Image 1 (cartoon, rainbow, N blue to C red):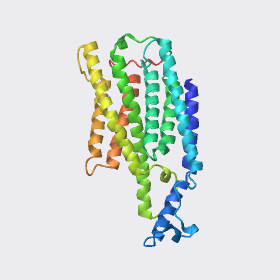
Image 2 (cartoon, rainbow, N blue to C red; image 1 turned 90 degrees about the vertical axis):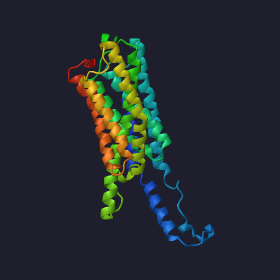
Image 3 (spheres, helix red, strand yellow; image 1 turned 30 degrees about the vertical axis):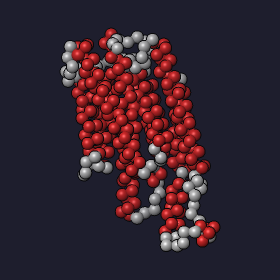
Image 4 (cartoon, helix red, strand yellow; image 1 turned 135 degrees about the vertical axis):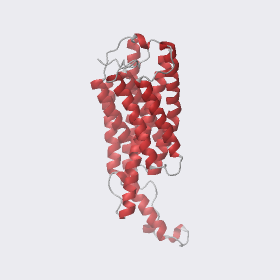
Length: 319
């Protein structure tokens, strides 16, 4: 089922990519409508004064073919998410515990949350669907690496993780990681789109290439910010729950273990991003770079601490 999930997500990536590759009609409609409006400024507003060839284009004109690619991609993404959830459900049934007791399970669950978060964003934010090729591409890449390098056979929890706090602390970390993944992808695309728009404004060139087919910079910025606003409190709760669990297990709330240290660094970076996003002079590109740095620290914390460093949290369960 894990391989089937990757296959379905991969097909969804192809469909979203097709929407980007052939989705020229939306831009052309916007250009035609803008030209038509400018041509009729000051003219009588009666529709019968316009010749058929001068009538304003309708939003649905020419959009349906490429829109179908995107909708099909969304449908396959939802199907993939169901299969993805099935991976965790069967894992839980096989082990008789919550399915996030090692890095393989944590990574698999985090990617699922990221995919679900994208589905929510794509249905609620106009234009955000065109992030799909990149969010799902990141998900496929992550799942392939997880399957190749982090796989662990189903089995009981190690003694250090046999606590009710596992379901609280790790669940919050998984949810926040998945949501913040979408925020990071949105910020990366925002930087690409802003650079493209700036070049167009400076050179006066015609809008061509992949970047012009991305969601508008304002949409990407809004998605990055809103998902971070949603995920940050959950990450905060995960850190607090981890400290309470540490006191219960080791007799202290905080000991600057490598994972604790990097969890705090990530928390600070996200706090700085949310502050910068609303501060004059830091909005836009500077804030987006901070958001990317914050997400990179989360990934570093997940991989480096469990695979390289030595500490109380060094139990990734990698075979």
